[in-house]
Image 1 (cartoon, one colour):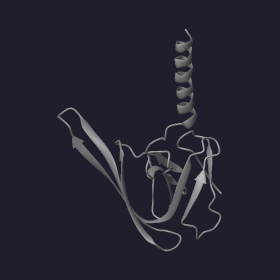
Image 2 (cartoon, one colour; image 1 turned 180 degrees about the vertical axis):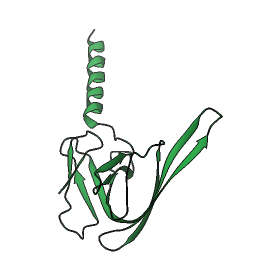
Image 3 (cartoon, rainbow, N blue to C red; image 1 turned 120 degrees about the vertical axis):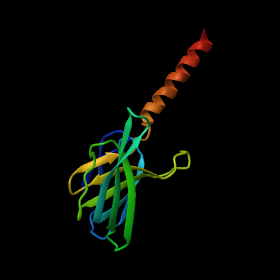
Image 4 (cartoon, rainbow, N blue to C red; image 1 turned 90 degrees about the horizontal axis):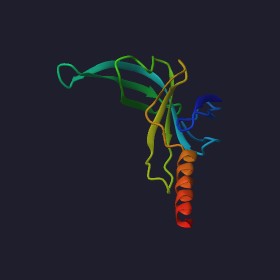
Length: 156
């Protein structure tokens, strides 16, 4: 079993890869009930470059570009390109590393489509979170507070 943290609530999230031939699985956070699709692959070649963009003479924006070639446990070849804002490397990757991609699984009542949430390098224990899904308890608390305030307003 592999341990990472839930992108929504930061509680422990266990990735149940018990067999070497499993390419994709689903995992649910026991705390916030978000459902994730987890894919894994082995890096065969990694190219990391730094891109700069000058907005004007004083502001320069940096972006790390990753080009990863890998193979899934079932033998399917994959190529993934992504970028991370910033000048300094916040995610490390090397050849022969095992990578896990966490996608937020779409649910009918959510408007969020299947979207990449986090990448985890199991070999170097580095991770990068692309975005954090809204915490459901926080949303429920806001809704409850609004209803209580409206109810109190109508009672006056």
